[in-house]
Image (cartoon, rainbow, N blue to C red; front, top):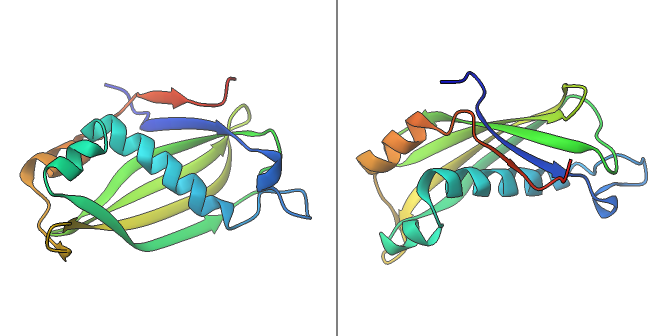
Length: 147
């Protein structure tokens, strides 16, 4: 077993940068979303697997703390771990590092509530999903960066 959590690498695109030549703060919500989607796909398989169980997730909270600037063409590595797993919700913690120099760029916590789409109501986290979240995906690396 490895100490490394699930990792997802991607490259900063030109259009994600602002007039200060750094990644625009609002883009980090996108970075969290794509990173968590890769994490969920790794844990649960195709997202459709959740929907087929009449389950879905909705964001209820997102916090981002910025530590250092990221710029066009940087490769960022999101390191993703499950945080608190409650009765009907769970939190995912992400740390974004610049690949190559290990500079911590940002940290984020995103909390989802599990819902039953057929009723549009929250529902308890099933034991199997709880187990998958608790286990995580240590050592798994997915890269879209072409590094």
